Image 1 (tube, rainbow, N blue to C red):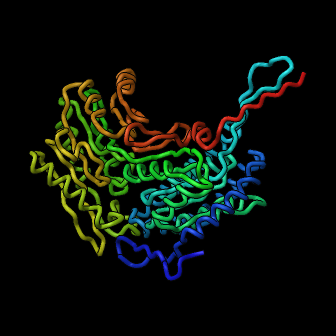
Image 2 (tube, rainbow, N blue to C red):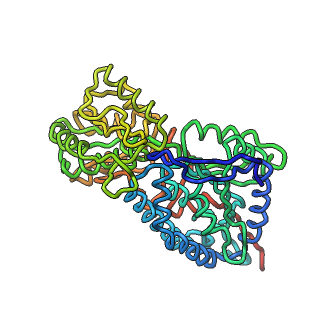
Image 3 (cartoon, rainbow, N blue to C red):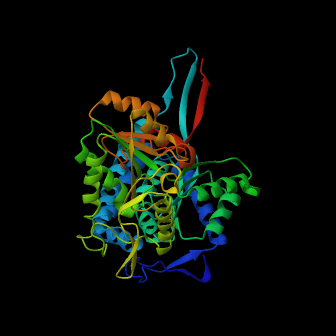
Length: 469
């Protein structure tokens, strides 16, 4: 099943100690995984949706029984402070239970008006075998969106986690690998990018869900275009590729609440969030007040051992990621921006941290305002009015989320109409409501997860047209 002597050994980013050993599957082993998934999918699709829901809820008991161990595993794998790992579990259960509650209605056939002598309906048929490639930054939350919707829709799942968080994939397999009487409904694999690419190009799968970088998404698209042999047929993909999410603090906003939300939205998980806040535009009349509040908040972060509850910011998942952050900040400073606080890397223990950073004087000539940095960096820019704010929020190659802080719902509606993003928030940010679709535009990706539309992305429309009279 594995290439001899090929073992993945992820390390704890704070201690640099080994965080486990995982045999790496070669392409031959992955082909066998796909074959088992195909056989399981044939049986699983025949299980009524109500029973799929029951089986999924039973699987969730694994996560409930192992909450503390799973939270610590996330912290040791990628450096997230333990209380944030515990929060990730809360979000995992919220999404999984919402999808379980919604499945029967979302997957029920669409009934058409009665027509004498005919039975007509539109069914939502499972795609078959779904390959889900999940990242390290939220290994539970990014995976459950696709896993729960795919399983509830009647698909078999092959789940590949990042090389930083392979242990989380094992928890999914233990929870959902055997659903009721059927085995191999979810199989977790540890594999290299090259071999996963071969699976996409050459194996009998039906859909790919990828969360990661724009470069990674483009690679998936190229691999899909190269499908041949048994895989010589068209399949689709869903891609979530990150963002450069912008927020606007209007003249009538509550500056204290806006600062607390937006600093947290930028700094949470050391800024390693696809929908984290990476730029803020503030009406000129509120700018100095807002900036002062942000400075006090940013200065209050405690960098340290992420396994301790007093730590509010952990190390970066990999030391190398600090290089791009430092480059953006230094380049912005050389172009005239001012670093109010932070702006450097810092070693704590053996971990590499990027200091919580607040920047003013930035503009859209600078990379820090246009390209994702995936770090705890917050540029704050004054604007004249709502129209300038909306224009600057849209001036980005990304389009995942945007936010407005205001006391006026009508102002928020105007901003939302102008904002070219998948989600628009009012008086909040950096949060996914499972009842709402999660989607992006431009380089933030394609496709939809969560909400009833997440089920539709895991199924195809099947027309039933019977003449009975």
